[in-house]
Image 1 (cartoon, rainbow, N blue to C red):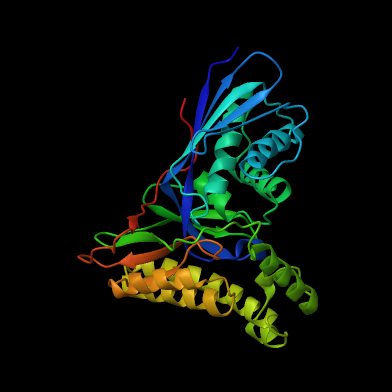
Image 2: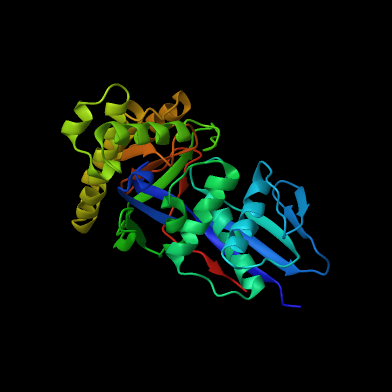
Length: 343
């Protein structure tokens, strides 16, 4: 019987480029130091038993026939099923899950869970892991097919490719991932909880994706990567505003990369504010609680602040200049290493 394995996958913060991944646009995320840890120990018998330590909850199932369920259990069963479809059989095991990323925060605890599970089961089975992009696609299928959230690849790629001190410029058409130095110096990136939990599958996230697909159908294009402002202006409400947001969000990514290259943090703050306005007004994924959190950060002296992740609640991201203390409850976030097997 093989030895126990432990895998860790980080959550992520997305600087710019929200809702661009499923539209083949650009995004600029980075992995954070907090994440999800999965410890898998082989056991005799025919069952996988899973303990979610933070929830004091448990599940048990046959890895040869993982049936659909709801909630956190769907991630585990989905991971086993998708690995099996890829030719990797997860053996009977005791799986213990713990995490330091708040659920429903917009910091991608779900992708961290998927990636950590996949790495742990791969290591336990002795299978050769696929390259990181292929593994990101497998983890995305867990979320799409088993959890019911039609997310793109941003969160999984950020978790797998993360590098200390760097953000990642991701092109979702070519799937090119390029590290971008994040030379913050005495500037700080912080997040603040809006106090409102979010859930991609139950929120308007899937509805926004449907609207983007409808816009592509009306425009006769395969993705909004090919859309222009002139095209957007021909669309009815609210599709015209959805398309304008996606175009603007992708453009802001390269503007931010250029600003970081110049160490122009005032410009980076302006881009964060612009991204928030677009997500609030054109993509309509903000909430009153999110707006209160953004206002608190701006009043504290933030150069810019925006919705974090898919929206509809969760945390807010802000850039603070040197010497400006964060408001109560805000947490500093730093770019960290990507997912890995620890033992």
